[in-house]
Amino acid sequence: MPTIAVWKFTSCDGCQLTLLDCEDELLPLTERVRIAHFLEATSVSEPGPYDISIVEGSVTTPDEAERIRWIREQSAVLVVVGACATSGGIQALRNFADVDEFRSIVYARPEHIATLGTSTPISAHVTVDHELRGCPIDKGQLLEVLTALLAGRKPDLPDTSVCTECKRRGLTCVMVAHGTPCLGPVTHAGCGALCPAVNRGCYGCFGPMNQPNVPALVPLLRRSGMGDDELHLVFRTFNANAEWS
Image 1 (cartoon, rainbow, N blue to C red):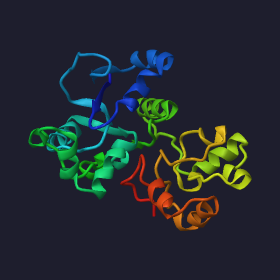
Image 2: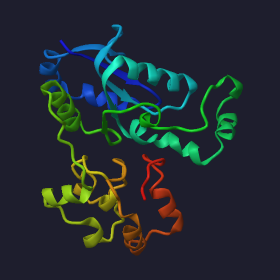
Image 3: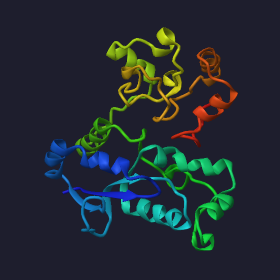
């Protein structure tokens, strides 16, 4: 029976919880695989190697940089999940500032805190087989990847923008109809257009789509009321370290 291991790096655990949130879908899956390591769900931990490893979180400490290399060696297939693992996450805001200054302000004894100056995605350290975007990820995509791997086929994942999902759902464009700033035209699909469905502009939690045309979008965002400061901040949220252009 194939083995699955789920690993946490620097993150909020939300993407691991997405796996637990599969609930009914998870029951038949556990009949096909053995969960060898998943500390969010059980204290039982079996030694590797593992057929599939699922990794949440970014690399922000020297220990994590070493540990991800060991996990890669122990894993036939490595799947990274969430904005932290695919782009560095919100904590990648440190990449644009002085992490030592942050450490001295936050911690009473900063000399005891071992951290790197940057927060980087898993792919910056090892070869990654599959990536799932989002903060958190979509459980449907997670189930698609797992079932595809068990069936020996390539996962069917979207590679277009959130705008295509709006069209499929028959949603009215919030930017055209209401002048609401929206990153949907440059954001990777996969969320099902959750925010536009409730008349809110997309804020890019799934990161940039393939070849995003950000220069073409910026004038539209300005027309919708965004100034220089807002434009600077809007691309530095969940995927601050991603290449938007």
